[in-house]
Amino acid sequence: MSTDSRTVGKRAEAPPAAVRLDAPARFGRPLVALLWAGGVLLLLLSVALAVTIGPARISVPDVWSAVAAHLGLGESDLSPIRDGIIWNLRMPRTLLAAVCGAGLAVCGTVMQSLLRNPLADPFVLGVSSGASTGAVVVVVLGVGGGAVSLSAGAFVGALASFALVLLLSHTLGGSTDRVVLSGVAAMQLFSALTSFVVMTSADAEQTRGVLFWLLGSLSGVGWSEVVLCSAVLALCLVICLAHARTLDAFAFGQDAAAALGVHVARTRIVLLCTTALLTAALVSAAGAIGFVGLVLPHAARALTGSGHRRLLPVTALAGAVFLVWVDTLARTVLDPQEVPVGVVTALIGVPAFVAVLYRTRSTP
Image (cartoon, rainbow, N blue to C red; front, top):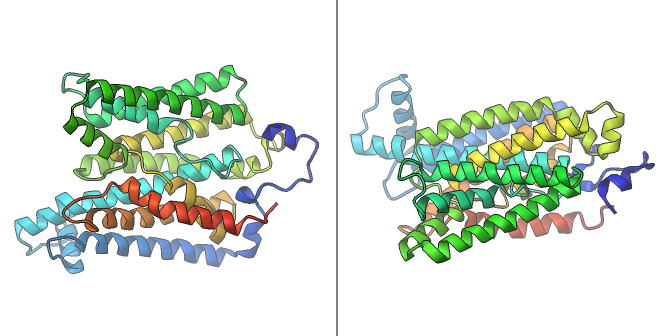
């Protein structure tokens, strides 16, 4: 039985645990404001500390000195090498990790509420599989003749996959379960295309590089990726916050949302396109990093409840802090060898998700 049919004629039915709206009653505005302020402070400290961790010995004052100098707020007495390590290598990577963590967590929050599925994540629309195909087509097949970068190919592939999902779901009726099933179909299709291209055309070195990127990698990123992804995140976060009350209404199902005056079809298209655009931008820059958008929304709900005006900023901050430290661990735990970020998020995310399931096992 579909989600829509279960909601018809059951106005007194409570929303599922993943989207329960009575939870915020336990939390006042001062506590939520404290969470936001604490989250911002924790994020700033995490970025500053993460930049200091690595083979080169760098202190937090060195980080602040370099940043202030590049922002025109003072002068730095650091050597050019140490300044370059901070500003050109570690700082862009750490900031992009924060942006990716925040963006993936926000997308997961929106998808879980929009589809009324606690297992939904940013990749449920097949975006990551399409990005993978676009990346390998550029890297392995050489499409674009060197004029198209891996990130650009991944972005185009992600949008192509999402367009296919929209077409399939619209053809099949446009309900939430059809969106999920269309995403699964697109994911399998593009995953098969990626495997076929790699197996038939890639050499060993290309295969290793592509597979490392597919598992999530923040190595070699620059300020251009940080600026682009930050701009897309800011735009999409504003759109999602503007639809916060609408997302609250979706917690009771599409019929209840429509009864509350929500234009269901239009709102769903807007939010699906928003999350797909943000996911595509993040995946094209950092590869597929799983479990951030699946686990972090549940953790944030435990703190703020399911009111999205409170939930979305806290989730973004939690995702940012989480991925900053995951990336730091990934690049240092086996130094000089680097572990793909997606591997570390999976190793941490699976036990955390099992804990979430265990905690809510008795919730109706």
